Length: 375
Image (cartoon, rainbow, N blue to C red; front, side, top):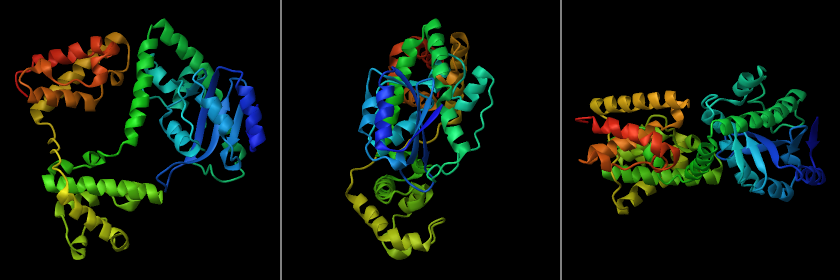
């Protein structure tokens, strides 16, 4: 049974009813095509027996929902909750604390790594879900019957999946592993909010000289502020590769802004003066540390050896290899080892230096490094 919630009174009644249960399944529908911030359209909740579809466009008092979802004694069941947490935070000022992410749990329980909701439902219940409404216009009213059915299905199976995965984690004695991954998920979400190092993500930035790198950092910071202020995607302001070329050229006058691929006259007229100002202001900045060059062929061979060793651990532990360590972590370890004569003293990412990974992952990587004669 699906209930449509489109008033403050109905929302209060729903929250009063759900306050009696300790597990609530939740999902959101939103649009994020031509804006910086996601535009929330719908919140779906279920107690395992019925589903509530909350029309956030018709409601202006979300206090009861905030109280319900932020209660640390209540477990919220999500699937791949990263964007859901972002949209709840930005649009409704709701920050849940007690989360069970079925995508993470499925990976830890060796059901499958990074499985989408439809695939997980199919794997567990042999049910094919229709995902055609995924990219439909959720802000349009009224929603179609197909949209309403799709939205409800997104929380329909979550309680059953939660029960199965909770038992699987208990049987495999991996509750602690799952708890660590949940904390890491919150840390990752917090890290995404910090864009002060966005310039490091720009492809090819490692080729820039120190002054140009300082300019790129300034340009990325300015674009971030502008994108947020105008609520436009970063690429709608200026694309990464345009910023990279501007930083390489270090222009000082209007005429030097022309002739850059993918930067058009209208954008130059709108943002040109601010771009020049960022380049000029970067002269007074403290030097930026150089970005390391891509790994050499020899170092990449060591990377392959590290991944191969982790593959053996994954097989032995019956867990997807991707959960053991990611490429960014392995590269950071390798670069640290390359800079340190004592391979045992390299800097280890925090999550590999604690918890279950410290005993299972760290020794294997360490063995590969110590057996390597040269990088």
